[in-house]
Image (cartoon, rainbow, N blue to C red; front, side):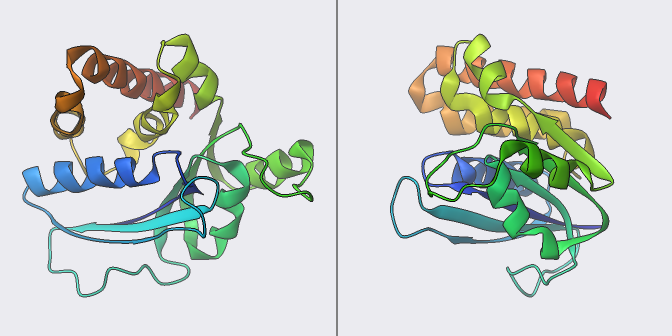
Length: 193
């Protein structure tokens, strides 16, 4: 088993938090993991991407070759499009519908959504609204992780335990809000697929 995941977004959207949850869950499940990350020019608003590779065998590189990503999880829809060359045929796209408009020539949303939906396996969800409705607008990333969860080689229990581990220092309320976001993402994905 080997799963290659590209995480994309802009600084401040929680890309590295998704990577940390995946890493923690994979290690707890006795899988091998490699991760790389690239931060944009600015801490908030610059492009951020991470390659996460999970396998039951040794992994030699932390970078995913073009055409080999099993899924792309993006917290920003235009950033998802940047990494399409990495997606393998039949791979899964999971993205929030809400743009982070940080350039003057940002594409028209209608065109952006049409391009995303033109791919075979796509989950385009208003994760930001879901997170806000749950009372935790910062959990957009965790909603998207939940939406992708059924396609990950990690158990639901390992992912939830990883969320608890990573957020426990922020208190029980924050842990529970993130678990709610994860569960709602799973629920939305089931209705979407």
